[in-house]
Length: 427
Image (cartoon, rainbow, N blue to C red; front, side, top):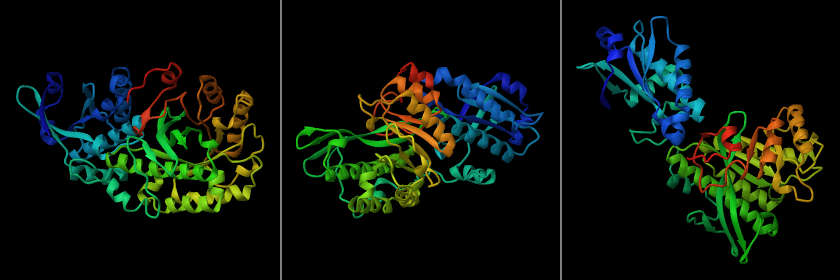
């Protein structure tokens, strides 16, 4: 891409010799601007401040940078070779995208060599795919060393590839706008709950859950279903989550997929067989993006049994977490078995036996004692969120954070102020 930009002040600062040497770049971050949408005017200055900080750490005494519009900076390094300037810019862009979006894909990279044109103009020539690949290798950045744009190469398998492997041996369920027939008599509408990472103020994980369930013509909750239908419901959400991840990956939308599996389903021979069948068919390149949540773990569970379930799931995902029964005060079974986090599911509490501040305080103390992360699922009110934040709970999801959505919209930043003020967050 070549475009002309008139910047008399910059042209007066940078000599034609400097441009001729090839030591001037222009870097852009339109990807962050596009993701931010209507929020861009409010966060633009903080994004630029972050980039300036990253550049300042790499530039020498004779180097300089200048902001040329709301999503582009000029970087000049007179005493450096062009490749050194390119690497400095690549690292800055990579670190900035990871800071604000949690990821930096090949399609985010906007780095152009600047040359001197007529009438005080900059002529910008975008680096080629091969140049970016080579620069990423030199900079030791493996995450963006494979093109996923312009050249048409896809990093992750497409949905058609997944269909030939991920559903092997498992009954396929047709999907139409999130509503699908499951087993006879069971109709499910599913969606994805965003999970808020409190420490990073980001949405990183999405849990595939049933949004509406009908069984024999009646609306029901998952816990009300008979054993067989409950098992099929969980397997259905598992398959749909993997299918959706494949669709999103094909469009370069990245996130972590949360898969909920109840203790009862995984503990039964039939349920365990079906869960492992799906697990084995998950493509290896997807497994680092799958996080398992063992739900409805009963009080007094034996450590050996819980440990066996964690060991069963760990090879097929990034991590495994587990719920604790309401008002539970014994955590020995959860210690030293390879769990990533522990927490409460608000659906297991009742109006007659609600979640209390003591529960939040105990979870906060226990997470430190066991050196694990903590979470709350299905949070529906701000009072519970306040308790969670006050006790350092790491992950939260539910209507109080964001409503269930038809499909994941990728990694996003979300501040506590936007949640507490119930600001409309536009994706």
